[in-house]
Length: 192
Image (cartoon, rainbow, N blue to C red; front, top):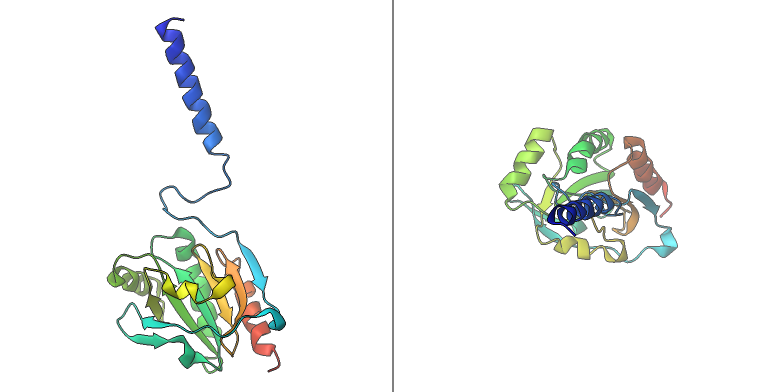
């Protein structure tokens, strides 16, 4: 076999490997450096809910926040980081839903899990007009407190019922504002 033939075969093999690598089920790990959620929306029946979640921490602005202080309200937890493209895309829907919600009945809390400095997360929030607080949790410890419903990727949105139990999970980008508001309304409408 000549040297040129071997080089041609090696080049063809490399091209085939590159093309087949694009057939993977894993997406989003390129420049974005994350694996996106699968987009499933899961509503948890009251009988299947685990106990109330509790966690606290410091917001990206440096203020203390304890999720147990929000008991009695439906709480929307949005897991995000500033380098996540789908997180940027869904932020206007979250802002609109938060603005349209009754603050006496619904609270929104972000959980920033990947930014290396809280200043990066605060800048992201300012640029996108986010008015609700976000816990700064680069170690993702708060997610472990969500039990078997802990999201495995960003973005993710968790709806807690008035008792602080996981009532719904959007594992991936929010499909639409109406999807989110329906989950909130359904959780609000539950009889205690």
